[in-house]
Image (cartoon, rainbow, N blue to C red; front, side, top):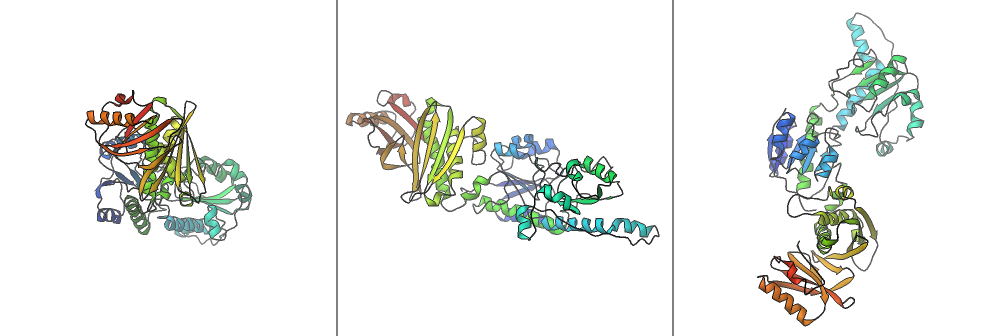
Length: 494
C-alpha cells in the first residue's frame, strides 16, 4: 500500500505523553488541545490529517465533514462508539482503536467487582464502620468471553440460550453495537438462575439498565457490579443507589499502565500505517490489511488505472450497473479485495480533488447503484487482473498485470495489445481500421496541437478494427479532432 501522508495530528484529550513523543519522533507534528467544544473542534479539525481521542470527544458526522484533510481517526482505547464510523468510512477516513491496550486493566476491575459482589466487601466495610461483625459470605464465578478468546483459554463454548440458565455470574466484554445493545434484557434475565450476579466493565447499554433494575427488585438478579452506564455520569441514580449494586465511575481503563499502553499503541499504529508497515486496530478498513506487501502498491495502481481506462472509454455510456473484478494467479489470492476497491476508485474518480479511496470505494459504489463482484481463479500461466463493467446492457473489459514493477494494460475489450501498454502518464486510446494513412493523420493532429508522441502500441485486429494506444506529452485540448479518423477515442492521465 502507498503510505498515507499524515503530517499533522490533533490530540483532543489527555493521552499518555508517550503518544506525542512517538509521533514526533517519526516526523509528525502534534498539537494537543483538550476540552474543546463541538464548535471549536469543527473549526480546528480542518487543519489536521489525523485525530487522536479517548472517549470524551464525540467525533460526529459534522466533525468528520469539517475535517477536509482527515485521513485517520485513532481512539486510544477499546471500542469506537464515540466515533461515527459510517460517516468516516464514506469520507474515506480510517478509524482505528487499541483493542488490547486496556484489556488487562479492565479485566482487573472486572475481577475486583466479581470478588466484591461474591464476598460482599463494600457491605462488609460499611458493616465494620457501623461497629458490626457480620461474617456471612458466598462465592461463585462463570465468565462469558468471545469465542476465539475462550477457546484459547480452554473454556467450553455454548450458545447464549444454553449459557443463561447455567451462570452464577455473568460478565460482559463486548463493544457497544446494535447486536450487543441490550444483550442482557428482561428475556435473558428470566432464563438465568435466580439470584444471578452481573458485571459490566465494557460499555453502558450492553445490559438493559431498566431490565437490570427490575431483575434486582424482583430478586432474579442478586447483585450487579457496574463500571459503565448508558449516560455518564448517570442522572438516574436508581441503580447506583440500589443496595445490591456496586458501581464505579468508569475506571476500567483508568490505570497508569493502561493509559501508557493505549497511548503507545495508537501512536505506533499510526506510524506503522503511515510508513506502510502494517495496519492494526482498524475497524472500517479491512480491505487495506492485505495491501502492505512489498508489491501491493503497484497492483493497487493497476486496478485504479484499469478503472480509469474503462471510465474514459465508456464516458458517453454511463451509468455503470455492475463491476466484476477477477484476479488470476496464486500470488493474487489475497489481493482480489483491494483490486476491486482500486478499480472502483478509478471508475468513480472525478479529477484531482479528494475523491474515493480504498476505504470508501465500495460503499460509494453501493450508494450509486453499482453492484461489485469479486472472484479469484487459480492460474499457473500468468498473474493478471480482469476488470469488466456493465453499462446499459453492454460489457467492457480490461486485462492488466504488473511487469517489472510497472502496471501494464494487456487487453482492451477483447483486443490484445502486441506490446503491453505502461499505465503511466498521458494516454490516448482510439479504435479504427488499420491503415498507414490513419497513423499519419493522428500524428498530424497531435503535431498541430503541439503534443508529442512518446510511445505507441497497437492491438491485434478485431473485426477489421484495432485499438491503439499512444503515450503523449499532454492531453489534447479537443479530442473531437479525431472523430473523423477513429470510431472511438478517449484520453486520460494515470
